[in-house]
Length: 190
Image (cartoon, rainbow, N blue to C red; front, side):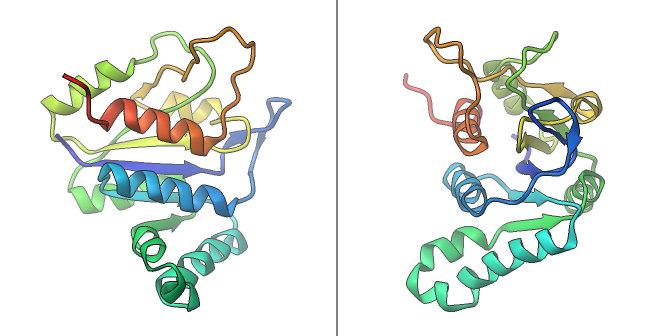
């Protein structure tokens, strides 16, 4: 199986009106996505944000728990955040993984919208067993990834759907990421 990476994208994402925007970083997203990544043994977790002050905020959070006073208070959190990396763009992320892996990664976009030709989790799980190509799973903040990200991705994953007809499908990115990563990388009952 190839190396799997997770990426939390803050631009380009959609707002509730469907406009392309840049969203703000949320501290909980950083901790929780890093925890998911570490629990499931992914190769790396990225936070993508074009704003230098927002990237500096991410670096301060990481530094607080890896080198600062948070290290003594929550050593496991520091170990978890150590492999979180912040980058200015999706292009920079692709370049970083390509440099590390010596090949361009495949991109798998996530969305709560139904998209024709979306790939199921079991299908991707099977593909991962048959290839050593690196994969980056892209998670969008705010109201999800902009169409341009879906279009540049090799695949778009099926939305997470509940087994209940609630008429509501707007999970937090943290919740959706945990479910999706478990469906792709989690242990299955035999």
